[in-house]
Image 1 (cartoon, rainbow, N blue to C red):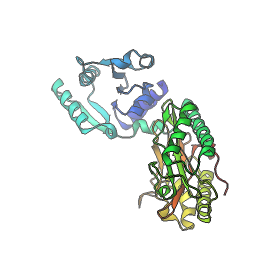
Image 2 (tube, rainbow, N blue to C red):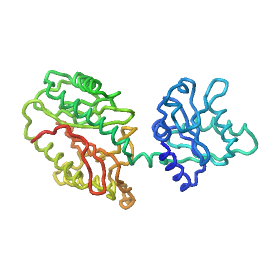
Image 3 (cartoon, helix red, strand yellow):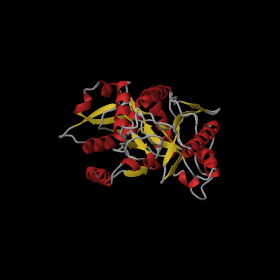
Image 4 (cartoon, rainbow, N blue to C red):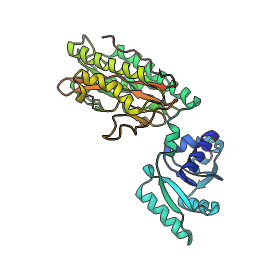
Length: 366
């Protein structure tokens, strides 16, 4: 954690942010190692403070952190402790996470700082500081992600042979969740998607009473979470014999995914990564049916940076570059309202030479 803290301090100096309040759950956990549900960090060059309440101060995780612990209570609420720390450290500029701070929380902090004295520190909105660091995974993170991915692979591989046409989407989703839990997942990464037939035309369909049926596409999107880190996997299957439409759509999506995986590498623009899969889908006449980005980073959040997506008009040369150590999904799809859809998703690790496919669950041979 010391290396992460020092990397953040270096980035703060680069951005001219002398102090930073960290309120996002994942960012707090990444920097401090503290995984309780409530807490805030205040970081400067001289100090690293963790504010949390009595539920967590007795936990080993709170004591092991390199941060100085300050206990929130009804007599000494969070704002009082923050104002005291700001005064103690002599801070005149405090960055706050703009994407994770509500208007109400910002207003309350301003009011508390105003009441402390004549000199009110500047509150400066900051975006993407910790998130930028979190994009590149270290060895410990990769070990945890590999475990979450392996559990997910094992769960779907065990359940698919047990699925029957008379099962509903909800029943299938529950079978998958049980399989994840039994194999060691602490939770599901997100509500499992099982979408059969025309429901598969909805990229984020919710499982319902529709039967899996025979001969129609079934999209399964799932993942298990381990030690806070998320896996993400999509397979499209069919019970019974696939028809000619399924074979065509599935083959197109699989070829697009394989092309993208073959071309991914550090230094490639995220927009160019998206184009690797989008171009063959467009060439096959299904461009408008590929309605989302190629992929997204995965880690402490199921969706985090970088986003592998089409650039905004005029921004083609401004898309960020992929960095070695990024774990991202690669998930092209085709969705047809009057038929259904196909999506295939794997997680990959970006390297200087290309990428390593981390997901290992079988795909259909069409």
